[in-house]
Amino acid sequence: MHRIAEFKKVSFEEFAKSFTTENAREIYDNIKLPVRATQGSAGYDFFAPTDFELKPGETAKIPTGIRARIDDGWVLKIYPRSGLGFKFRLQLDNTVGIIDADYYNSDNEGHIFIKVTNCSVEGKTVSVKAGDGFAQGIFLPFGITVDDEVTDVRNGGFGSTDKK
Image 1 (cartoon, one colour):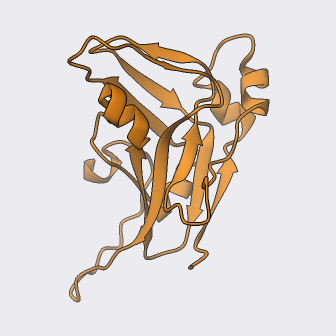
Image 2 (cartoon, rainbow, N blue to C red):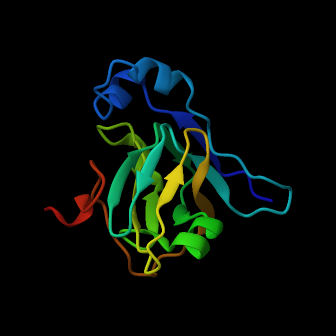
């Protein structure tokens, strides 16, 4: 196995920008870093920082309080937990979240947000409790073309690399 990354919390100040409730400090203090469930697991489970419920068709943008320091040449791909996808058709709004290594140094500290929608066609409501796994991340290597000469630097998240 390649040890190529490390999960950390964003600062409380960065997290609090997304949680303006009185108990933001308590929520922050209880954030669990992503972990694998078993030795053979490829995915690192991301845990909900608070309870959330989604009726069919509803969407939520979940601030995880997590950032990932990733070695160059690797990417973190985010997917819904397979059980939630299978039972409720819980889906990521961008189908697969892509966390690039250079996102870690963005102004928002590389804070990973996961936007999910309940796409149930059976009228099922998804209920996730604080501390429950709702998404999973898998680290994968990637390559670049031999003539790649990109020198631009990232600052931001969703859609930031096409804003020039």
